[in-house]
Length: 505
Image (cartoon, rainbow, N blue to C red):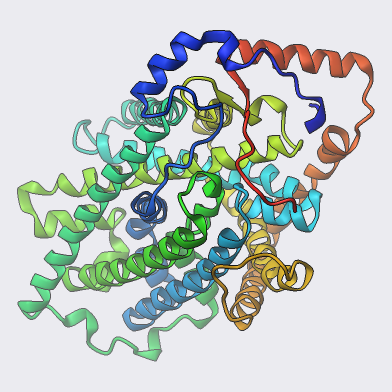
């Protein structure tokens, strides 16, 4: 691994393949004379589709059971959904200020690196190991299970498991290929899947409202009955709710490709989270209108049970909607996280090859493809879900630290133009609440906390050897340059030729 100033640069795009560039750039809607860089082409509609598409994954189909199980009351379960939504909205506002005022991509990696370089590295380190790659793997498995649910006999466990793993691998490979191939195509795919999952949830909501109009309100009788409330397990209920809302942090990861980010990031984040809050609440009300609390807790697939109750022979629409929801969330996650890997490489904290762009297609191809082998390894592991538990605390610790940079940057960099500002009380309250979540995870899941802390701290020696240690032996730097040059030729990529941000921070 080399520092930023030691990148290997092969001949520029015009010297390599000018005729190919003209033809392929025209097909992708890119000017033929445009230099190699990530192009500003993500508009407000794309931003809204990205945020909504990432948030609405499998959580809304999984978390209702977990929240009800850990609250013991329909009323308090719905209250947890409201509180998690408000908490998410406050965090989204804080990220909106950071994204609007700092014009670098990378999201929380960039903000943490501005605070301390090692914090940025540890953030990307945990994301590579599990925080991003594991959820994509789980979403791919969930999508595959829903697709195969009606195609393979439920008794064929071995056959179904193999088919699920193969299909999940194909889903991941196809989505990553699209993100490597074309920014425009990945944007269009995100919009399509966002619309598909929105329609699926609308079917649930309309079905629930119809049930309510027919007088099916038994689940809401004595909704706040305190005799069944499990106060001790409320933190677990909040974790389930926040899992469903996760993904609101993604938009600032693509700042340099957003048209007018100072306006569009705050507008898109606030609008998207508000829409998701309304959809989630209506969906949960619909669940309880059709199913009793006991039936919901007994169901292993809430959406499937709902579909069988309401849609009859059209029940298969629900598994398809869940699959589309998961695939759209994977696509949005890869789109954003690839930019984080790209920026981390550009800052000298990941291998140089990850900070390069395909000459013709203007995509961060190596950064987008980087996660594929890791996800494939996760697919064959039986401990994939355990990794989520191990690093949940670190995710919230980094999110809390990122939000805490809002008041710190106000003091440290008062001259930064801030098109959007939040009241300082909001990042303070959010940080305190996030710290409480981290503390409860230490108390309620001590073993997972210790393992997760060990995984996170293991990134420190990696940082010292690969990033902080600049004067490496000549043999190492020569070998690194040779590998980088070979991969450049293999992937047909070069470093960006135009600086796409103004910030000097």
